[in-house]
Image (cartoon, rainbow, N blue to C red; front, side, top):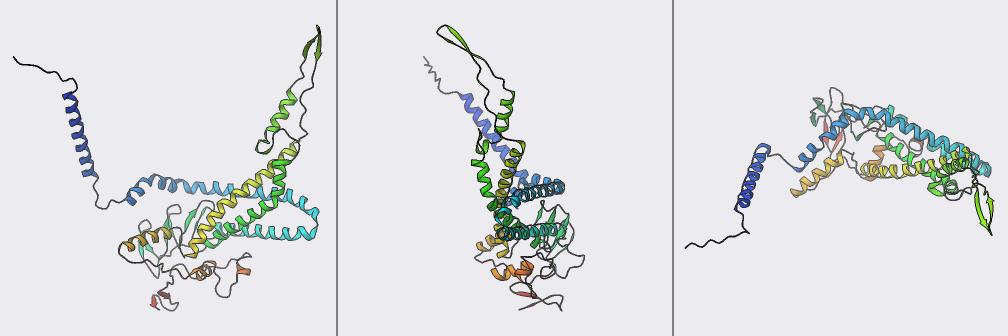
Length: 383
């Protein structure tokens, strides 16, 4: 007699299903690897491919965002300056001319430099390679034209730019060889102006934000005082009937008192808060951006070259070699070349005061730590 044993804990169809799914997954993976195989595939190529939608948005919409962002810069800057002058001049004029005049001169000097450098950064052409260049390092794949050293193609302007740093939508212009100094000085003077304005505005800001008049809502909740005044003006007095010893007494309490705040008080308060927070935000943002660009200038690099040099350092490190930036002349000399402090120009006259002097060189040929440009020769000679 055959004995049958039932095993309910084993299900053969689930085992076959698992094998079937595993086989199909392996076949799908092998098919995808066969179709997508590329010997030149790398993490950088994958990242660039993933960023293509972002690049497409920049190429098609950055040119339209430029005028909008410029309008925001001009609007907020003008509003901040107007509020500062309308509030601070009457307030500090009472301290006397001996105290007011130095601050007035210093503040206007910062303002003049901000306006000058921003205007010049917008109006000055960053520089573009001509049809014939004396030195060529590569061919631009988009312009299909020779590209001189340190030049790069701008996807927004659709042109190559000499010593391109980046395309600035706030300037609605590329930052390159001829206007890089204006861009950097605008950031520095704007940051200094905002920092100076916040310093002068802080006592008034503290008075309005924390102390001020007797209000119901203090600090950041100050705007609720307008709603409180509106509620009190609409609220009617009510009658309360109280019973005492069998006798009803009608009590009519007065409505809550309204605050003695006019629209002028509200406008004054919001203007002070707006200017202080706007200036604080600009100090933080422009301060970090200025430090980043100052670091690049100190190493004779641009925002594009710093990434190129970083990859080159990694590549040479694997070969046991050390990368040396050929355009790095040292901290002091790099700043002199960037600011154009050559041919007898001085920091006090050409940096602290508005100046339209051009940078050294032509942006087409660059002296390096091993080669120098000879003005009487089309090529280069070894030092």
